[in-house]
Length: 242
Image (cartoon, rainbow, N blue to C red; front, top):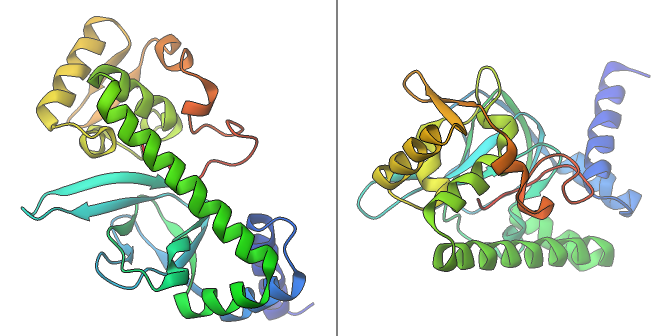
């Protein structure tokens, strides 16, 4: 097999792994129409305010970040490899967030028009889109419920548990600067919670923005479905609205 053919085959394999049970013809069509990009940390994969593309991370991690009306940058979610994002591209939705690489990242993307055309001809793919949008709606509801009924400390612990592999890796992918947006609290409130967790011996602040996990028990006490660790829901971790 030629190098070009091997690359196309690997690309189709990655897409098929993210779309289990899909029509092989649809996989081939997606592979043929994909835009492949390699981006470094801090580089944008798509911009807030642009038409949102369907996106698949082949490797690396990314964050969803939005700029508020008063100019604040908030990190509102994290993207892991092997999952599709931007399913609302099927209806030509404008992105309310931007997707920014946290690490060296390889991403595939498709125009919303191509996604819609595929859904019109492939019922399995259309159901996959519906399932992902339903999951997103459920996660959004859970996040709003957390804002209303969970105290700030529990929300911080939940975020640290969901992204444990990224906060406590060496070097870390996520740092203390990402916490306020992911938790949905102010920097001051998040700082107070971290100081309380330090006094309790759960974490220690390291350097200007790092964290070290000292006692994992509070994180492990959360229900398994509240985490984003591999295998938490029977598969690879995906988008988290923390």
